[in-house]
Length: 254
Figure 1 (cartoon, rainbow, N blue to C red):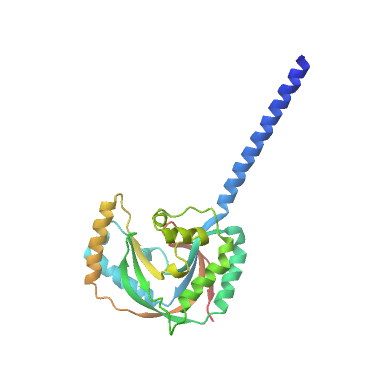
Figure 2 (cartoon, rainbow, N blue to C red):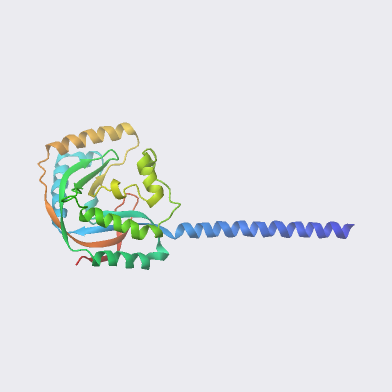
């Protein structure tokens, strides 16, 4: 009888040890899977005209006092100018495949001109230099085409379990887009722009006051639309605000 109980006890301990091992292995593997994904931005690099236009606006903002008042540093001071085509969590183990796909897209696209339209203090507290994305003679323009191609060719490498941004959850179309493509700005929802700066606020009231003040300053600014040439398609790691921290690769258009 004692032998039987001892055997049962040993068997019981081994079973629990096996279950614990499986659980720990699953946790480790889950952690490894999370570490395989990083925010990577597929973007366009453009001629220096855009940088100069943003620099001019930043000087105007500095003189207005709003940057100092809200302790805001324009992105241009630490990050390169870029226009995002597709930003999502990508599997870094597939980086060579991503590079290959982007290089192919770049090799088939001729250089083209883009036109800035207006400066937009958006509800998200980002201030953006918007870019014309209208169709030309009933045909989809180069910007929309490149965005579509980037998503179609690269979404197979994205993290399908990535968390949806809080602001996108409240907008059904954006939420659906994120679930399908890993970004709320895909296809018809694509909004090409250059990010100038972003404010961070503890309360909605503070953000509302900032946006009202920024909007008034922008209205008084003597903005002039310009054209700039798109030179290349790049790949880069970005921070939580979508600003590039390290460019991985850059492929010139033909």
